[in-house]
Length: 299
Image 1 (cartoon, rainbow, N blue to C red):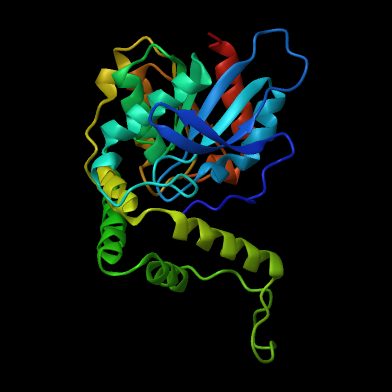
Image 2 (image 1 turned 45 degrees about the horizontal axis):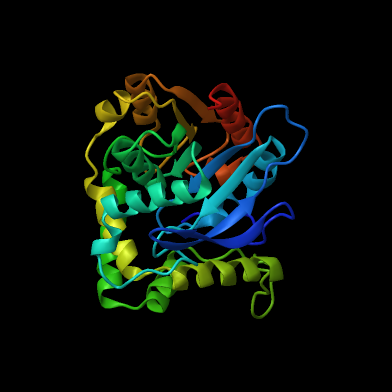
């Protein structure tokens, strides 16, 4: 599960609703800043499975400072964008149509970035209609279905969501991955005191989890376990592609990203010291790599 460094947007950004032909979506919107001679461009950031727009908080300031209007969005059924208790609206085609509606509302052309699941939704949107996109960035998002261990984890989560409520599942997640404590060791006396900042972060993560739609998680989780390889289809389009990842990844093996980039004729960036979420693990070099690519492909 992604863990943003904070849930508080930087001063350059505002929380808002993006009205589209397919409904309203919760966004964080950071306008372009700085003295830039070129026309400002817009980037749209799609979060991954169980994630939200807050996963991009650490990128908003540097991308805005580089002259890009930066919009991070909660997709249908994610965190602050409500969704129905019906699997049909979470089909990949429907989520891709949502992205196309978001781009239309923002005003094309748009540089599109998708993280993990968001990358596969982004790819589907570009394959449906490449015209409104100045570029596509696939961040830690592989060519097809996720690795076998991750497929097993997603099935375990989906099975749990089918018989338990969100609060019960969160409690089970916490028992497997407990928050760090402020005091450890045999010398500690009595109940261990939790760091207030750690406790606050855990509360916000739980709040985000509770506001996700369980049907959305089950449906998109199934997509991750069955996604076909569509690299050849994407390679046939005249849209510049950037494949970016950390130097390690437990969702897709990193060599798959390398091979995908070759097959796409795409730019390839590996962020040192980062895992599956370079946007939260190493924001500064990630922002530098992104803006460098976008600068080279201004519409």
